[in-house]
Length: 174
Image 1 (cartoon, rainbow, N blue to C red):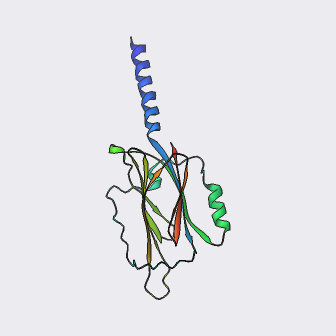
Image 2 (image 1 turned 90 degrees about the vertical axis):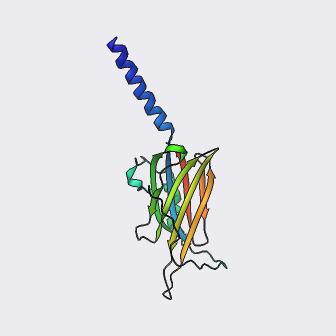
Image 3 (image 1 turned 180 degrees about the horizontal axis):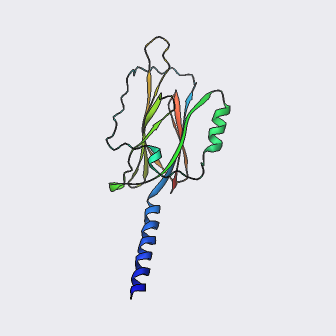
C-alpha cells in the first residue's frame, strides 16, 4: 500500500510539472533604434508610462538555453540604418486570470525602458508599453512611445514599429 501511495504522489508531481510547463511561455525580444525619415511630429517630452505595481525583471525567470532571434540580432547589427539596443529572453508562466506579470525591459544606457506582458483570452495577446528617450540636440529631449496590444500566435515573429525604434518579438510555448 505504501508503494502505491509513493507512486501516486510521484505521478501527481510529474503531472503537475507538465501542466506548469504548458502554461509557461518563452518570450524573446530585440529592441532597436532606426534612422528612418518621417514627417511625423513628436511632442512628448516626459515619460507617460504607467508602471504596474507587480513589475518583475527578466532575471527573475528561467533563461532559455538558446535564442531563436540570434540571427535577426546579428542582421540588425550589420545594417547601418538600425542600432540594436537590447536582446533579452525569459520563460514565464501566466498568472491568475491568464495575465502574466509585467516584465521590465531596459537598455544598458537606460534610454529604452518599459514593460512587456502576455494575456490569455480568446487568443494570446502581447501587451507592450515601451519608451525611447532621444538624444537631446537643443536641450529639449523627446520621448518616443510604443504602446500596443497585439494578438500573437505561438512561434510567430512579430515586428512592432515606431518611426524611431522598433521591437522584434517571438513567443514560444515554454
